[in-house]
Picture 1 (cartoon, helix red, strand yellow):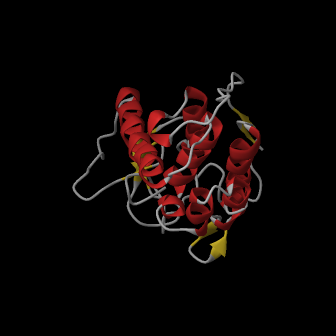
Picture 2 (cartoon, helix red, strand yellow):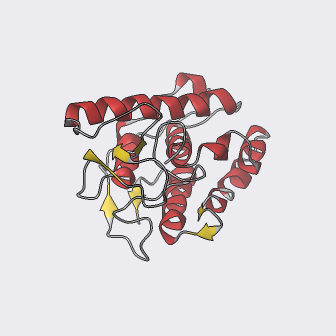
Picture 3 (cartoon, one colour):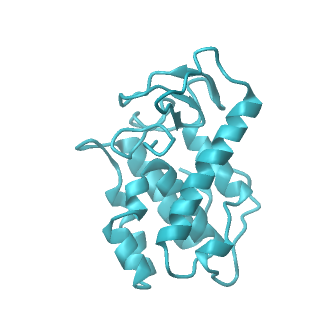
Length: 198
């Protein structure tokens, strides 16, 4: 979760249902994986439905699905609501939100992170690569704003960029087992077009 609108500390987040735990229950998103045959400019791509489902599976609230009441973020900072939305200054959802509001909030937050990918990535991407990068930035925006991952990717070193995903697995200075699993899932999405949470 991030300070650009989704919950997290230091641009890295974990979900209260799993990412801080030593093990995660298996989560499988829908199987109709949209894989572009040819790479396209990032500006021409949008987050796919299966990519959105993947992100939501990691960003669900304490009771599963979107959190309709705000709750204390497990890593500190502002409260969280919806699918990983970190409350911004002036926002108050103490009365709760509807599922429709949670969907609108996710759409707005995911659009922000899609724009990060479109702005900073200068090389063509397949749909699965784009989705993986959006998921990464939804959780850790700095990964595509200033990083070795971005440098390698913009040099056309896709394999080198993929190897950088697992560097973004910390909460503060501590390695998070949940974030390590998520990063591996995103790496598999980026390299193999696999949309499954291990």
